[in-house]
Length: 193
Image (cartoon, rainbow, N blue to C red; front, side, top):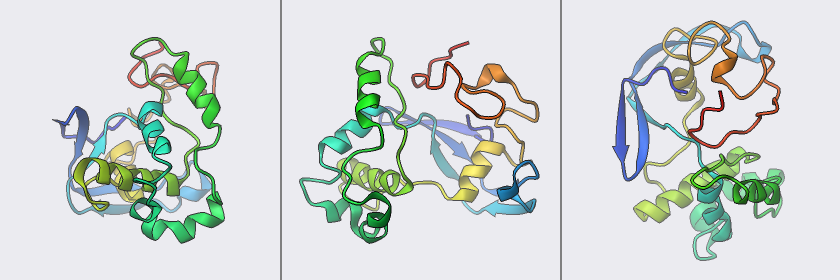
């Protein structure tokens, strides 16, 4: 859920939310790692994908060997050295076989979001997608900065939840503490309520 979007942009079968530049309230008092509350700014408009990356999308990246034509430096490049300490030589996300099984058992047309991906894998996926669609690793697909993500999710006023200041269980797939519920993973775009 993106609360700060000023417009939708449909491009190449994807839906992007346009988040306007400007100041926003960052941080919070609910969790220790959010302090202090402060005003930050996003300097340029940003595009945030409306939907998460799905298992079938990520499966193509895994199928390419986490690389492009077996040339890992094209995808991993500057990430390779730093990621080795976290990932070792792993070639797929955590619990990948369970994710593939869930996707295979899904109703027709339903796609699950990929989970268990590290920051390094997500960044490498962006570089791979840029190479796949734009023929350059430094194209438009990238991870948002912490400030961009926070403004997109919490809005200019720093709401605790993307939809406002009150917990609304009908809008999420977890309990109030953030723990998975019996509905802990939903297909992208499917409302379970």
